[in-house]
Length: 236
Ligand code: CA
Image (tube, rainbow, N blue to C red):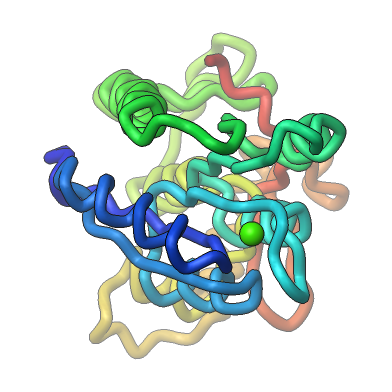
């Protein structure tokens, strides 16, 4: 991945600080989006789809902690760096507990912020290169095209493999039936979403201990499916 295509969303209501961060990030080659409130940040998480969010905790209206919590549910793969003042130590800890990846205490050196972002992205590209997902007793080896359950190979159809990969790449995220159909079968597929349900049922029979009480693939009623975050025991 080219680092100059990385997108960073800066969430800060104080104009001079936000502009200062943005200018520095743009100078480092990132594509930068700006939000002045938590509500605007969540909208941009959907439309701008940032790789990294630089999130001030002190915002009018919805505060940074709430934003952090919501991003973790809706876009779990996004990196979050929270910004705190020195006096807000408890907020910093709370932010990390709510799923922030890192924090910076204001005022900070923008070069240090850029160094932190680079470190996080290096971590991610290392994970991507490995291309092996491990969840509980399951291990999916993308390059070898194989699934192992408790170290025993499980035979998957190509469709089941694609579905499982999609789930493991989107842990905790509610995936809509239609989006899954489009992603796996293509935009021009006119099949019924029941087709998808059948594949999911077969996949559950292969990976779940008890397919009627799935531990991994949860049903999101009226919408689709979710790879359950509680089952996220991926190796670092
Ligand atoms: Ca602020």
